[in-house]
Image 1 (cartoon, rainbow, N blue to C red):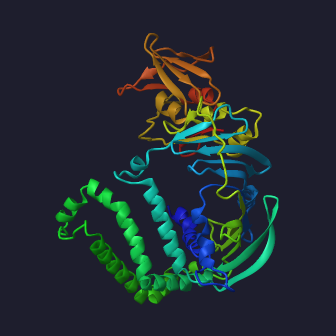
Image 2 (cartoon, rainbow, N blue to C red):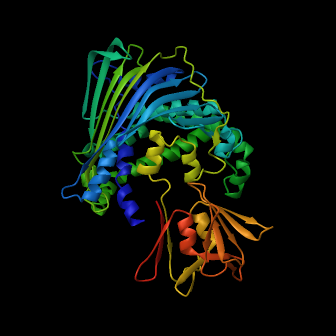
Image 3 (cartoon, rainbow, N blue to C red):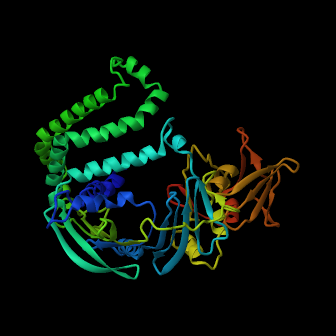
Length: 504
């Protein structure tokens, strides 16, 4: 857990930086607010995007860690064609790059499901989507209302964002999907050092924006009131001693909530500088993460209708020295182009026929591989680079899960536990009093008959040191090495008696 926290600690500032792309103040006569809000009225469009990662290793990095860095830097995502239909359906065609491999893929999403397929796949993968209400666990929610809330929230945040230290506007000519366009380029840069002051300015603006704050709360009220009534919130308020609050009085509720929220923001502002200083004292790494070497650069290319037609995004985060994360910095770069705004767009449908339902139960590694042509790049990526079939088990001398039994130098284990942990299917053949095991990756079949000292693996007889036996709990025991070999796994034992079972 400590290792995970060390790696994740610098992620929060990244998310915070992403909130502050530009401000609402006009720059050289250009309305930045309109540029950031212009895409809210886009119902259909076509676009493309590329994404790449660059990790800079720390000095003296080990060869093993350098391999990991090289793998990170080999990753790329290219969405060559994304289609947003005016009914909300979306499709995407692109490629994922990893090491020397390039894997083409297609995705389609409508209100009922997500379908995904990659080159070499025999069948697409299908993920059904819950209804809007079921997904959020509440009655009375309106999807169109949620869109309105999202728009109100975006408008409220953008309106109150301060301008960063570096922001400029210029008229340019740029190619978008092969068409040369006259656009306005909005360039902005933000460093980690600026972030605390920008956040403080944002909170001050929020505190003073009574009209905008109440408009947002009014929208939230309209959206949530039916839900509160359907869920019996009035009774819950009675239980909390707040039954005198008239939920049906919209103006009163909005006023009370606004005043309480403003009071909380004002209290935060009073303590802000001291709390920030205390935060830096308690975590010295923040001076690196929120320093001058952490920088976000964004270029927005906006047309005369205040729609973003092109966007370049470059985020570089400085990383404190750590044995858990041996990097100096990590960067994300993306480039996006958008065309055919609000034009006729039809998403590319992927058929559900024969699709594999990913929601019922995630497929085993073997089932995943069998859905791909062994000669395909996707199969190679899954099997050899990502190692999805790799499995490791550790059996301790006094293991209270596997309960190994050692007799005459042979370790016996409960067949079902070990086999299923290696993704095999275990079935009981009552007629023959036998346990039938089907190996996950290659489909080999192992048969162990209770009371018999002879097993079969793919039809070939294998002699056992002693007959298969059942313990007092009804678990069938077999020799570990025979079972592991039949499941394409190896067995090793260290000097302390720990047993390691590994399947490549």
